Image (cartoon, rainbow, N blue to C red):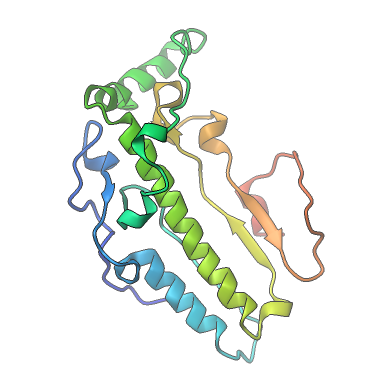
Length: 213
């Protein structure tokens, strides 16, 4: 089952000022209530599904858009991350010395880091990314609370993952188009009745592994 598209206040490029070469790095508080944002609406729909009785086993996918760009979320999600407390990634001066010329070109030309630095917006961008993660975590929490309160609590297996990481100036890069761990590592969590709890593995997996699992 899937929700119908609903208009929302935070999708699209929106009103934010560009932080890099283009509007791609738009990042700013969006002065709207949570219930006017797209992810809140999608979670509302998923909660509605969990409150129903289903004749057949239910597969429910709830896709949360944030922290995908642009980083527009309500102001309250920015407040825990004041700019003067933002910790930036450490980028050594010789960070790119041992990579091929093509990689250096990507970092210096396609990554947009010089533009972000030139606009003095590095901390602003990291702040907005953290705010977007906080917002997404809040939506996941709403969904889990609804599952706990639903008739499906004791027979539902949860799989939680995301599609990619994001470089926030790491190695002088922005985005995901590298093989660095910051771009390739994602959360992957299984939880539910009959599954072991609190176990962690350092084994490599692929998102492709989710389907046969």
